[in-house]
Image (cartoon, rainbow, N blue to C red; front, side):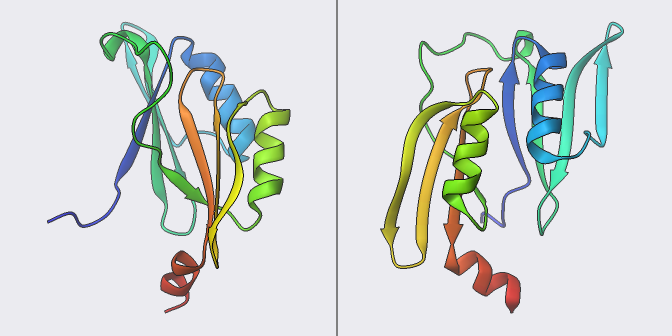
Length: 133
């Protein structure tokens, strides 16, 4: 039934600031911008080995915001969890979960971005095995 991830959507009160922050984090500009009433309302980046989509939506379209970050965490594959985690914190992310080895070949960490979204990073040997197949 579920065939794979298509887009992960984050929300931001200040879409221009989110665009700048994520462009710095990812090292690319968004490939798609949708405007509503002359202002950006949605931006989207394609990233990684499979060109997965990270969309950031102006929070005015999100409904009520939760009191604190929570819920599901999407983990993006990285080669160096500690290095990625340290860089995200240096760029203004707040520690959500320090790097933890979950088992042989699996390490996770997460930060809360400056806009209140949880951003997870993970070294995942299974991901690399699938990519190499």
